[in-house]
Length: 428
Image 1 (cartoon, helix red, strand yellow):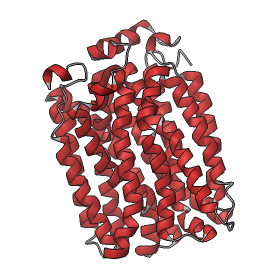
Image 2 (tube, one colour; image 1 turned 180 degrees about the vertical axis):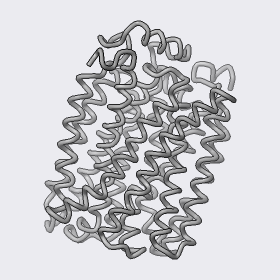
Image 3 (spheres, one colour; image 1 turned 45 degrees about the vertical axis):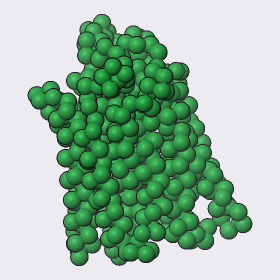
Image 4 (cartoon, one colour; image 1 turned 120 degrees about the vertical axis):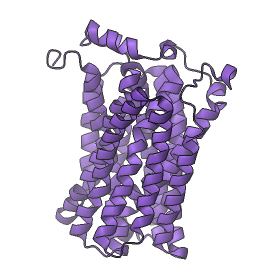
């Protein structure tokens, strides 16, 4: 193993973070695919199902910053392993909640909330890995591959979950995800280390390549105080933009499958196929966006490569989503909406790259705050989408998403990629 990946251990860790992302989002999307069956078994209304979706996102949101701080303090190797074991356990428990019994809606909401707490630590801890393992000039590509796992796992969820629904029942989708989670946690703990100098497989040449590409502030051993993090206007600007990003992204993770099936009238087979498209587009968009962001940052500057590129991607996504509402053909609408998902994810790596650049040794904490914004946005879309659709129609729900994309694009323009927590007090 050491010989096979000589000089590329950092990319081995990136590859396994891709796998963990894929499994996590496979779990996250399968409840959307199984939503109609859960509604029927638990006798839920669409708004109550939105509460179940939102419970996960609420737990996921509130533990982002604490989870990031834990990875800064205890190291991402341990935090990612424990977090993955935690959410695998509560994924299994989701399948064990009995239906047809009074009060089980509250239990289901509670289980999903606890599952969200476990998954919350993963992405901030990933960013801590990136901050110490990936040179600044490679971070767009690294984050692009990591977050391509979101699209890969989410894209695989509809056909796998549909097959399990047809041949078994919805609960098996959660059991399979739980087993995959346990396996990924074990492999991660075996192959990962917190820093390159702690890893027995890292050779001197790779260690020097990593060290020479790290921003100076990453060398600091102590995380920045919360006063510095929460007092940074750049942290708040990127968090506001990621809130809007999360609002747009989670309409795909929560309501897209149901929208195709019940609103656009696609049967279960076609819904499974077309339901894959946005997530496959996310995987492509995330990877391509990482390369473009790194390339623009190197050839022009980070203002263009991170901020302006992120703003342009979110604007383009909003346009795709709005255009899809004009499509009468349901298949064309699904394809255009997939374009909205793919262009949205062009911006994904820019968010995480710039948060690592701004934060250095506080990358877990800062990205936790940033990602908390996205999850609050996701909880908002989980709850608000059916309410808006019920009063104004489904096109209004998606047009609200377009508006959020434009707000997120504007917030990108307030971020200065040359700032850092270390210089914030002097620079403003």
